[in-house]
Image (cartoon, rainbow, N blue to C red):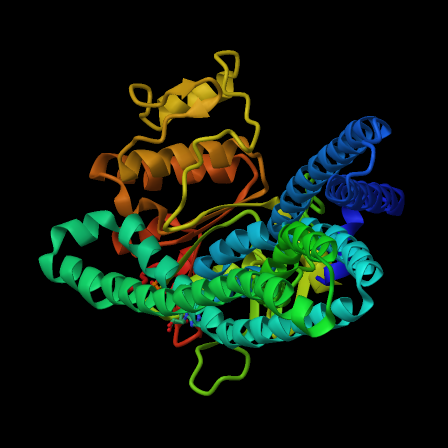
Length: 546
Ligand SMILES: Nc1ncnc2c1ncn2[C@@H]1O[C@H](COP(=O)(O)OP(=O)(O)OP(=O)(O)O)[C@@H](O)[C@H]1O
């Protein structure tokens, strides 16, 4: 994302109008200033009061107010539009990103990126504001030069000097700001674990104290110290900015009349003009620290966007090739973290999965079962290898589309409260109610305004997930340790009935399981070991000994 991209949400025509209006507003303000000074001059010199000044004063006031109001309304709308666009753009990037890049990035950085959008969305407004301020400053300086050219040179040089001192001081603070943002990422990481795993935190005093004292407290204290130092420096710099105006006024009142011999009327004009300049110059000065914050926020969003790799897998609503019979993998390999030494590698020289089979995937912890499921479901793209559907080789993009045929229940499955799958959850859906009854959830399965009640036990949640998965009517059902949380009755139902129901509905069933007493129910058992298939046993050979 570049700075210019932020302005794309509106046409050039819109910005042209905003800039023209801001120029009119600045000129009207300067007109008011000149008018006020002229009235003061008239009173000093005792000239006859010109009644046209009242009409001009009211006219300029109306123009200034109307243009400023239009200008401010435009800034508010553009800021909110940009924020909305940026938030949606990050969400779009995330939803199109590969799972591996998402996993690597982590939640904390994404939360920070969303916080950064708030900062970045203020950029166009701030730039337009500075533009208006600069126009006003230029007009006011011309007026000063017109009033007394030598005073103009003197004051201009002083203003530039004060501005340079302010900018130099401010740029020293930028690095500390980066440090604060890094601490913020770390803080979100700990806070997330603190809130998500509150039960585990609550149960253990050691853990509770450690996460608080060694991480949250330390992080907040470090942040407090850096921020206090940083904001104190900012505050002193701001004070310097404010007091430099008093210095300028002092120069006009005490030095210029003595040095350049300017009259009392010129002094009055210069004093009112300098007071008038405080607001626009203040805007330019506050833009400088904001600009550093903008730069940091844009860089961070860009870094995060770069890390989110776009997936070849299109977001499809329709399934493709759902009449397939086999999926064959040849020489598939996948290594975590690229080619990092010691990183786990999954290697599958040859493996064919058949639609008409109930396949159980087994193996010890860390043997590669979930990694394989992530490849099978298109979440991980293998580093090498070939994939065939019914003996037709397909490329990764086609395979990624094919994965839309799969319905997966992960071991740490999240049961959505909202009906994102747009299932028919009404009384009229007889299949839903048949499944609810069959899965022994009649008493607890509740739907309220199309939302599913997820306040269920773990086993009940998994059974609800299974019902919803079957309603998806995908041709493959993949279950990662689904039965682990089921009570003996439901586990038995699963292995003696439900898996056969799934098979007889024409779906392929693939289940990761450690329930060795039920291995005989499968048509086939594939055992993983050290990142490869160690055994591949068919039903007939099921003297399988785990
Ligand atoms: N995101 C990851 N980044 C790096 N390494 C990983 C990642 N996920 C898993 N691994 C490593 O890959 C190996 C295989 O993990 P995998 O989750 O596939 O095992 P598993 O057979 O499903 O184990 P379990 O039965 O415990 O679920 C493990 O050694 C693990 O350390």
